[in-house]
Image (cartoon, rainbow, N blue to C red):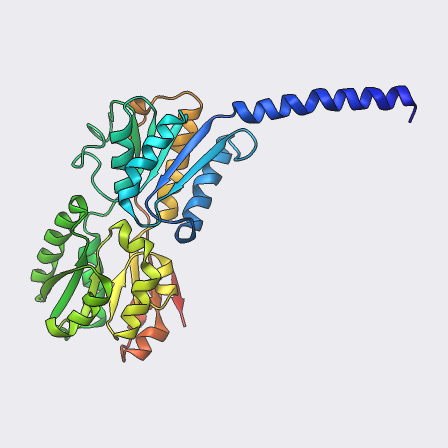
Length: 322
């Protein structure tokens, strides 16, 4: 290469690099706020990022993401939400009910896309599903009837059991109270006595024997999602047939998992965030409802508990762990 051409190449490169750096600095920023941890939601996060990419926004190229994981400590969420507001992010993607409420309390101007298992109208996130109003929209999982179905599935595995326990988080009344009412109604229909129990986890499982509970249904709160593997281990240690939601619970040794498909919720949230980055207003985007459900069964755990899983039930499972 001639010296003059080489010099032109150097000058050209010097001009390109500052432009690329400025482009990255000017990329819109998404504040990703979540009560859980990155380790517990890898598939959900992947679905969110994939939906963003399909909308034309690729992390590290033309969009940046500021992650705020509360690691199960919901008391940290208001401070994290306030920090994202100070950074003037383009949109806040809030995963879970506590994060969604913290984000809404932190700003009335920055667009918010929530993901929640609660009724977003009842807990005050939006005015209505079709017309959210304000700066908030998002995705709600169709969880009405979920705990009743979980109890029904556990009863199918334990038809002679007459006492079941329900684990709830009293610090999340927006979910705990409706879940309790739904579970009590389902238990009455099944002819099962239902007893409520609350954290902390170790004492809960030790107390189940005193309650004469032959099975346990775990509520849908994010606290339990963060500790799903710990709960599965405790259920195995205390030999308690337990049902919860999420593949990771059954994979870690939990007997049965049944619930809405979290990856679908986060995919829909990614689509909403992408539309807002393109200029749509949250008030014009109806709240989406995730309607896909999944079931996982751990046959090894069932065998250890002396439970025979009916073929029709295992045949309905998305995956069986052996």
